[in-house]
Length: 116
Length: 114
Image: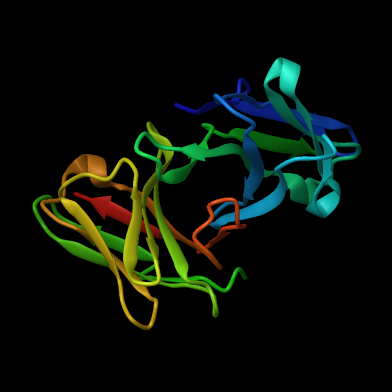
């Protein structure tokens, strides 16, 4: 069964600093990978997704993520963080349940705090 | 605004009661997904409907059920509520059945069971 690990529960960065949020997955085949962001009191919004091809994926709001098969990782990066990026970030992997049905499995999330 | 609407926004009820959460997908989307987000379990997939038919079940309790109506809106029914059912319930929609489609999430319904 697929699983997702986000090792960092909480990260604090200063505005303007670079950001990297870690995500490791476990899946038996080529995974379909996603990053979502959840602002306080809001639903989840898709930042980017990877299916195949170029391992560096560009998303919205200046985010990018790199798929590294050898490390089973799909880390999210941003070169310069803005105060509005403060939110919770979720990595997800798409796969098949036993029996063949499909679903998304989410990590526990990383809460990002941005200091002025 | 994702285009997915959920009502009510907040719901407070007592143990043993039954509630219904409603979701209207984005215009044109045929798939509806339900998720539960709680502090201890995180975000978990509950169930997926496509064009009125159940397509996949995740970690959904037997006390919970869902359906999707001909107008494509969906309802999640939670019965015999327990304290542990307190959570944020999200609905998401997508165009097709392929879970690799982008799922658009609603703002959620916060359920508090006292």
